[in-house]
Amino acid sequence: MKGKVLIVDDDQAMCEMLNDDLHRRGLTPFWYTMAEKAFSHVMEEDFDVLLADINLPGMSGIELCERVVANRPDIPVIVITAFGNLDTAIAAIRAGAYDFVTKPIDLDLLAIALHRTIEHRALQEKVKLLSQAVEHAQHFKELLGESPSMQALSSQIARVADTETSILILGESGTGKELVARTLHQHSRRGIGPFVPINCSALPEALLETELFGHKRGAFTDAKSDRKGLFLEAEGGTLFLDEMGEIPMALQPKLLRAVEERRIRPVGGNTEVAFDVRIVSATNRDLESAMEEGLFREDLFYRLNVIQVEVPPLRTRGMDVLLLARHFIQHFSHRTGKRVVDISNTASKKLLAYSWPGNVRELRNAMEHAVALTRFEKVSVEDLPKKIRAYRTDHVLVGTDDPGELISMEEVERLYILHVLKAVGNNRTLAARILKLDRKTLYRKLQGYGA
Image 1 (tube, rainbow, N blue to C red):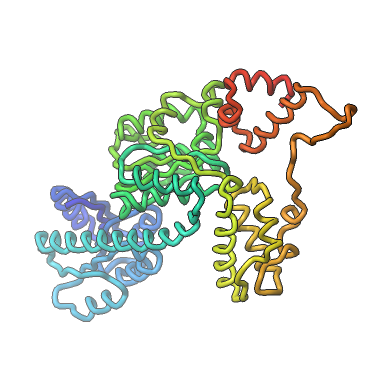
Image 2: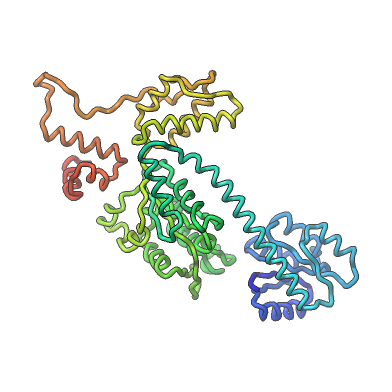
């Protein structure tokens, strides 16, 4: 039997006796003689069960039970009552207690009650995870697409979802990399486990380290209690490292060791803890360039990039733009209670002509804007955001017969290279691949352009 038990009894000798017995049975006990201190600890740390005496100085066991049920309903409470005091036991159950035991305590019967309670909590956690999985599944509708690039992506996801291999998802900002990661998780054998995302670019180095690896009490000024890191929060599931290209260089060796050894050491800790998670990463950064510049470790890149999944930008997905637009219109129409059922032909042409630098995220925002403004059942051009209405295709070359307007081949090359670079979101590696240039050659040309 494993689990963390918090004991509250005003009799210190009773606390010590229970502590020793539960420790011998494989549990991890903590104890207090004051309810107020126990409640503070419950609010800072996770426990599998709270074992509390009814008769406590200050806050009673019933009051403690009520406060725990109100603030930490995920932690079941077992109360200890005097033998034959059925009214007190009933009051405790009404206050939200899961079970009760009577004094004098039979340690074997207590162990059975604790085992039953811990199993109950574990079952509740599984039900919660299943509910979250169903909720997350609703988001997969936003991966709609009939274009060849989306069919290829779906086929690749189907092939690799149930592997245990680390996956790196590449794609521009707003293409739906997290939705792809959730899809990979949902269709894997780990789908019943947690999906734990973290945006590595949103946190400073010290905070990112403690978020990932956890910390021990006293590791730094504000570390008032132990904290599990996300590697342990994701146990049995998937840890999603979004914007992993922004992980600080100083933190990369520790992450590499964790990925290789499947063990972590919390900040301020002396012992390592094993973990069982699948790691899925994502970035919109050109990591090959970052490695050449010494900003990202090659060994970590190859550990996280065992399988590479590329999410296509929206501008390459053709009629998927209208498919997604109609999906978002239906969503926002339902949410706002407005009857909006389609897009006018002229508005559709504007949507298809636009380059969508913000990808699916920008399209979603544009449709929310359009549904909010429209007065009709169809979205019109006037309902679209101004930059979509005013968009004009950027032609690199303009045909002319006037010798005075003709430009040199060198200038044609410069304009086209910059056009391709803009089209791929400034990803130099991808631009070099499209232009069929060596990356060093491309970098040299861009330096000459001052880009």
